[in-house]
Image (tube, rainbow, N blue to C red; front, top):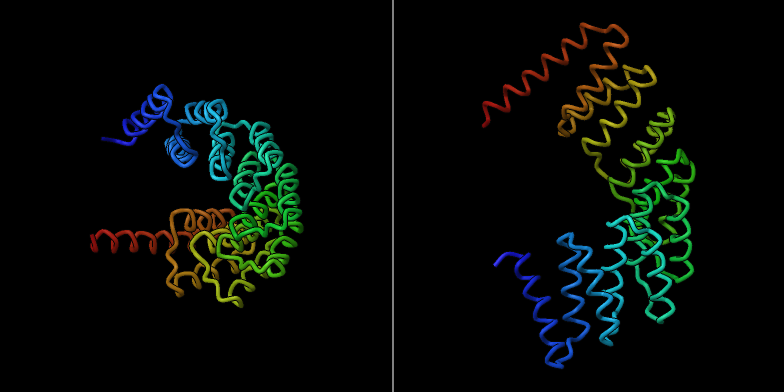
Length: 273
């Protein structure tokens, strides 16, 4: 029996229990709401959530978290925010999952001011952000060209006992590079190394692209060489950035040399297969 049939059977069972005056509990109902949300069946999840109230089954924080996430995925931001207010009114304390879901959803829709308000409210509840929460906020600030605010967010992580990861640094580096502040991006890159966080393909490619954009091809080439020597594999985007930069400066000989290296790399990969 696949997941869809299993969930349909569970819903039917819930309704039969109601008809037989056997009361389902919040654990069973929440499990089904969670499954429906994970399967993308947000309408049925929302219908079941409404039925829970009608049948006197009181949702807990897990149920609310599922529904807030469901509303966010459905683009119903105001409903998600109202649900947060509703759970607080019902004296059900939100947790880090509640706030992180809302922050992440608002940032994805570039509603960064709304995400900021949720972040501030989370702190008022004395709930400390996780690395994932910080990454969402840093991403949001960078999308709005508020890179200095993003940097301040990174700096505040230590005071909250939270450690940045490669995503944190790569996101901030990307923000600086898009703002044509590649030197600041390089400072963040160096800070990564000092903290013992290993840069990945995305990190290097972002910086390479940044240096190419400002015309510093020597720095871009040095980073590409460092990347390879550190065992971090360049991808198509890395080479494309480097080639585009070289061609824009009419450095065709160097561009052809990189193309040859790329061809050798592909031939070697095919031999391994």
